[in-house]
Every structure is written in C-alpha cells, then in structure tokens.
Image (cartoon, rainbow, N blue to C red):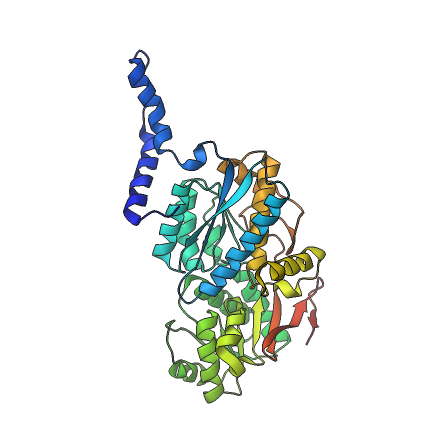
Amino acid sequence: MVFENERSSRALSALRALDELPSCPRGVAWVAAAICIALPFAFAPRAARAQDTIKIGVPVPLSGSYQQAGNDILDGARLAVAQINAAGGVLGKKLELVQQDDACNPDQGANAATQLVAAGVAAVAGGYCSSAALPETRVLHDWHIPYVLDASTSPQLTEHGWTDVFRTIGRVDAQGVFAAQFMKDVLHARRAAVLNDGTTYSDGLAKSTVAALKQNGIAVVYDAAMTPGQSDYRAVVKAAADPEPDVLYFTGYYTEAAVLAKNRREKTPAIRHFMGNGTADPSLIEKGGEAVEGMIVTTSPLPQFLDNPNARRFVKAYEAAYQRAPGPYSVYEYDAVGVIAAAIKYAKSDRREDIAAALHKLKGYSGATGEIAFDQKGDRANAAFMAVTVRDGKFEPYANLNAKGRWIKTK
C-alpha cells in the first residue's frame, strides 16, 4: 500500500513510539490493561502481525530517465516470486511483492524505504542507483530489515559495519581494477581520460579506476565530473580530448553515455570510448544508435552471456513471461529474491533479524548468476566482471579474465 508522505510520517512516528511505551503495570483495571496490551499492536509494523504472505519490498526507479531499468528489475523479482509461489511458497506462505518508485533520487529513495517499512516488509530486494540506495539502506537498517541489492555497486553501501545489507553484484572498486587492467592489457592504453557524472555510483567507479590506472602505470591526463541530464556534451568531450588520451572512460549511466557517444563521434573519433556498467543496457543502443557501435563496456556478466543451466532457464522463462529479453540487472534481482527465500527457508522464520543472520550463513546457493555467498560485509564473494562491445545493434561478449588472470578475447 502506498501512503501519502504525511500519513507515512505519522505511521513511522507511531512505530518509533513503540520503543518508548512502558510495560503494563500490575493492578491496573482490566479495561486499562487491555488497552495497554492492545495499543502496541494497533500501531506495530504489519510485519509484526500474523500474515498469510511474506512481503518483499522492491525499490527501483519506475519514473524518470531510468524507468526501463527499474521495470526490468521489477520483472526479475516478479518472475522469481511467481516461480517460488508456484512451488508452494516458503514456510507455507506465498511471497508478495511491494514495489516503490525511488526515481534514482536520494529523497525519494528515503521515502520509498519509509513506505516499505510501513507496509511491513520482511526483506527488500532492489536498488538501481547507489545515490538512492544509500538513504534506503539507512532507513531499512533502523528497522533491521535486510536489503539485498541487485545493481547498486557503491562501496559505501556495505562499509557501515551493518549486518543487514547484501548484494548479488560486484562493487565498483573491483570493477575499477578490472577496467584499468583491461585498458592496459587489451587496449594497450598509455594515457587515459576519466569522466564521471557526479552521482554516488559514478564518482565511486571513477575514483577506483583512476587509482588502479595509476597503479598500472597509465597516465590519467583528465579526471573530472560533468552535469547529468544535458542534451549536449561537446564542450565536455573537447575538454577530455585536449590532453590527447588514448581512451576516454565514462563511468555514468546510459542516457548521458548516448549523448557523449554522439558528440565524441563528431569531435574526436580517434579516441577509444570505453564505459562502465551503468551503460550496459539496451537503452544505450536505442538512444545512441550508430554512435555507440564498437563501444566497449565493463560490466557484471549480462544474463545472455551467463554460461550455466540456471541462467539459460532464467532467460527462457523471462522471455516467455514478458516477450522481451531481460535487462542487465533482471537476473541479479531474480537471484536477490531467490536468496531471501532461501534464507527464510533456512531460518524457518520470516523475522527480519533471522533472515539477515541466515543470509550471512548462506553458502553455495546455486543462482542464475552462479554460486552465491556473502562475505562479512555482505558483499558477494568472488563477483565476476566482463567486457562487452556493441556490434550490429546489440551487445556481444568481448573479453573475460580467466581463473589464471589471463584475458580470453571472445570478439
């Protein structure tokens, strides 16, 4: 259920007041005692009451520039819930999704999390933009609600020392190391320009990449932020190109990446344009057209390139359910819901604290994205990355690092 801001604020004020309620004194009249006992339940989170379903929250952008990414993630959650419920649910209960639009906006993210608390969710799976996910984690943590992130990759999300934040995808600091190694070993770059859009995710990926580039002996000749949401970045492209880099690495999202690609093609076609996982979305190709042909993107493995039976079954089921290919993070959301269900089953409880404790104990969960386990911080252990390229209007594999640290080019 969606509340208006004022009603939600009142609900949360009532919830927080529970912590301050005194226990019922002995000897009170029975009517007063009954009121004293009943009052906490009147205002308690709905998760605290007996329910026929177990509610899972999904905060994602369902409006604004990244609405399609949010819809793709939501559909991944819907598919997981449909399959789990068809198999009998968990603990004899069906799973129920509660969606909220965070619009990739910090304030709206905090509000979305507040609405999920009021709705009585047992756990949350979602998160696209790290800038919205950060306030979401803070609100949910206050209520001990475990949050399994499917796409938000900022290191800040799991550096609080909390025990209720997890993710099924790799962090940007690890991706930055991967990107720098790729630029050195595969692109043979000596001079690099790094451009971010100032958001939490983008700034984090840029910083980790710059540090890794320097460690690899690659000169960082340009490192700056631009303003997202513009329709023309010619001046930005010129500023990045003036120091004559071999490669320009953009760490933002696909909307701005498409504009940058068009401007770069006009002004500096000789410079290799390389991008981070925020651009690994079909919308990049739809918006960028021919300008993004040949672009290379570092990303967590896309669903269509995951080589395991569970991934193939996921892609087939997703396409059958929605008549389109899954988005890049649909499968990570699918697994986020899956690990929550597995944790509830393992704990034999849908209490929030029990779910979080069970997630930390999770070992060898066989998901569509491979084996899943979490480290002490809640980050995915052994998270993988790959490089893809745009060829003939679609993403194709470009290169992977094998277990021995050697590049396997697939182009």
